[in-house]
Amino acid sequence: MRAPALEMKGVAAGYGRHRVLEDVSLSMEPGQVFALLGRNGTGKSTLVRCLLGVQPVQLGTLRVLGQDPWKARRELLGKVGVVPEVPDVPPELRPRQVLRFCRSLYSRWDEEGVRFRLDRAGVPLDRRFEQLSRGQKSALMLALATGHAPELLILDDPTLGLDPVARNEVFDELIGELADRGTSVFVTTHDLRGIEGIADRVAILREGRLAVNEELESLKGSWARSLEEIFTAVTAGAAAAVQP
Image (cartoon, rainbow, N blue to C red; front, side, top):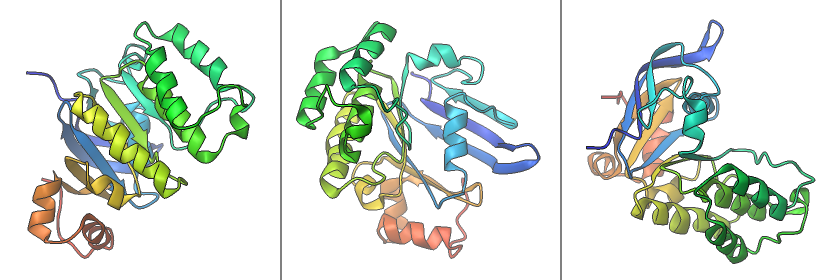
């Protein structure tokens, strides 16, 4: 059996004496679409930074594809695709230049597939990154993140600021297609309606702790409400649910 794509046990993380995450335990199976939800300031970004090996955990254990991301960050970079909340491509570069750079980094780079995605999204290859629309920037970041056929894709609020058409592109086509191919997808998002149709499992952070960690269909069945209604109740403290 394959190891979990992600596994956290009793994780605490923060900055100095200030804890942002406390006693977080979760497991994500290979090929799963896992949605991490929470209001701003509840620790989602800190958790993503730990997953990427940018920040160490203070307590507990964390494994990404079976490895400690803080110690094996370089090795994991070839297996993980990332779309950050804020696009980080240098503003003066053009997509064609960025593709050339990425092609030199990855042995499994799918140039044809990347160009197909960019063409479908209407991303001009010779326009400076700073001149692209928000939707075009997002499409470029997604194409770059998937160009090396990652085992795990981490999306940090990928639809932030996008119009409905672009959001549907992310959720209905990209994530669904990757999940069908067995790619594991971990996504933080505020777009509850978009993620509701494709997530396998949902976790909700409240004040740095997991208030909910459950299969989505089971969660909706037990609450008899939509994900948006559940999220509102949990984050407002109206629910007594705690992580299993």
